[in-house]
Length: 419
Image (cartoon, rainbow, N blue to C red; front, side):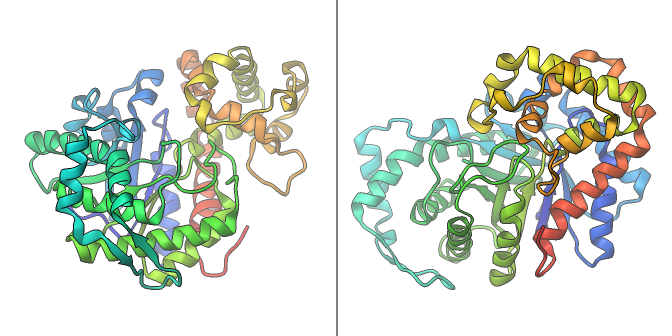
């Protein structure tokens, strides 16, 4: 199973927007751009929503049939490990193996020494095509990187072989994810990590490193956009070199776990992809859930009432909702409106405050982040929420399609585009 050059992870927490998501990729296809659709949902999200991995497969297959989608599509077991993999195996054909928590796991010195001795060919100058600066790899670097990442990649190998033992080799796409680690990986570290992945026999088709800057949930990139562009170009060059050097799959590409809406770096990503003729896998995840709330608010009436309830209860349970996402949100509670004020808003004011439009004076990134993690509140509403999604399906679907196409696909893949 070979993943296409361009692919997009489109999470759908409540399982109602798959057809609308496909409409966005259909618009891209009509522009001459083929993007494979990857539905991703993590173990944590399933636990909160009360769904199971097989639900995602059913939703995806139904949308494919309804929309007569002729392009590629996948169901991703998102951020899995050996503790939760088995429930995903039968219904998934894309596995995001998350080993971030195993980074810097202590290894015996002799294991590190064995790795260093076996990989002396990595020592010396690392020249990257299309990159002006040169990198040096000395033995101390090799030992340090092995000490930090060797155990994590070996854990990825254990998980990969567990999946192969059940599904068989070549029947799924493998991604190795390290994006939720504490520090970004340097180009030299990424090069050595890919060497370890190859030595471990993992046919990774995507690799999700941690990039420089902050990738917070649901809001724009926080950091030096120029530095990001420099390092993103270097990472693409590293992958190109590693494919040739280590015999990794020729379609190996970067995976950007964006946390959604990294608008200020999308043009830079697009420029880099065109420069290196590279592929990409980009995950938009929680964007769809927020578009559902925007759609409900815009509909007014009971839809707006539900949106206000979700916000009020999210604020009431602020600490509980934010704790699991503490590393990927940054909310200033002083900037959050009171529930009493929100209840006075009309639907368009609520939508403008939540919609990620940096040009709009009503946009509130703290409000948006809180609602991004507030999907647990909606899940607890049960049929009251899901029935509202059905009743307002048309306006929600329009928002979902336009958001993915206009705000995500166009600025990345259209030359010269910007927001």
